[in-house]
Amino acid sequence: MYASRMRRSLTYTLRQDMNNKEFITQLAERTGYTAKDTQKLVNTLIDAMGDAFQQDNAILVPNFGVFETKKKMERIMINPSSGQRMLVPPKLVLNFKPNQTWKDKLKGGR
Amino acid sequence: MGKLTIQEIAKILVEKNGLDQKAANRFATEMFAVILERLQQGEQVKVKGLGTWKIIDVEARESVSVRTGERVVIDGHSKVSFTPDATMKELVNRPFSQFETVVLNDGVEFEDLKDDLTDEELKEEASLSLNEESVAIPEEATVISEEPMVISEEPTVISEEPTVIPEEPTVIPEEPTVIPEEPLDLDEESHWGKWLLCGLGILALMAASAWGGYYYGSSKKTALAPDTVVVKDTVYVASSDSLMGVAPQEQAPQTIVEPQPAEPVTDPYAAKDERVRLGAYRIVGLDHTVRVLEGQTFYSICRAHLGPDMECYVEVFNDLPRNPSIKVGQTIKIPKLQLKKRRKK
Image 1 (tube, each protein chain N blue to C red):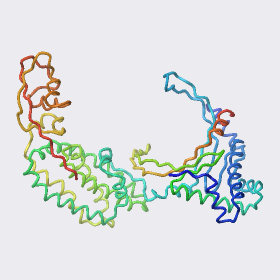
Image 2: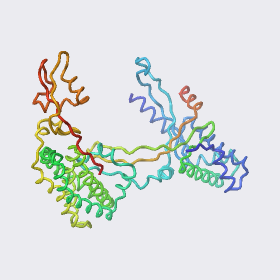
Image 3: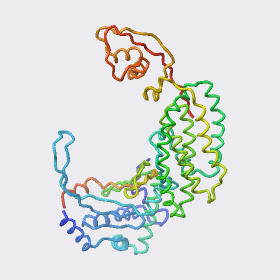
Image 4: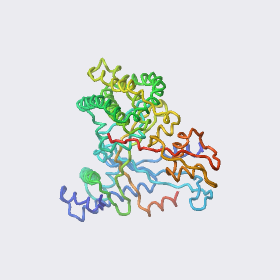
């Protein structure tokens, strides 16, 4: 149990995670725009997605997945350390569901 | 709620950035292709303004098959987790952004209130201002004047209250447990005023619902009334040196103190059994008597004459113990029942 956790944390530190900058440069390479333009285009795209979410729309990305908003009901939460009870308000959250084929690929190759 | 494809989203690139539709589509699909590619290499991908994707390993675990009830092992696998960026999260949640998490005081029960409060009312609660508060209190004042009228009309309704009052002392000891929590809030100076307002607003609504509870006749709610007011008091005392006016403070206790002396009438049946006290009906007299026949049980008789789950009224009316054993030839008095008045507040 602990060993596997250790191993995983080790792989996390060794692995190079992709941050936004890297993402933009790679996207720029593939599309042929400059990094600056790419960032601008991505930003407009994300803004448009945000607008769509606000109108309660789901966004379907082929071969990738679905973004959708979900309503979470209000609930009563108890702070375990102080025992205080809090009323947590209802929330709208953004949810992402990966494409089925991609999911299957993940399940198989570990 | 509609479903949009990424192509429709990509149209914005055509409008805003002067790409042609084909290039816009390509750009959008490339964008997600890059994310997907990196993810499949087992890396985490972060896109500013949208969110972070991660591949998470799920360890094998045991479960129970829904169909057969057998124990099955779910193999360990990877799954995709997506965490929206803070800005995106806020954007999506904007319709509900005015809500804040509220600390509930001890003894404040929401279970039975939830039925009455619609979402809109809850919204109101959250945004209750001082003005609304002062409106709520005059309402209570008018209730006091109504109270004597009701007593003359239906004396038996009030009779429930003596049975409720003994509960009050048990509530008051909780008071000290409420007060220590108050300084906790005080530490958060910035939020404190708002929280207090919200708390007071809720309490004011609860007090309002409490007098509605008298008419409801359910002593669960009437028990709530003294409870909440006690809490309310402590809140006011704690805040008397702050911005809050002291004027409403005196009115709150009055609403509860006044009805108490006016409850000398007691329903003798209600006092015997709490099921009768809390039930929807009250016994107003003898309806008829029945003689127990061969093969009849107490419950079958009650069910035949009054309906299911009405045994308690017969038990009390006949001075029988709970789950009584009856003999053939015994006479049982069937009480005449009257529905306790229920009124919407």
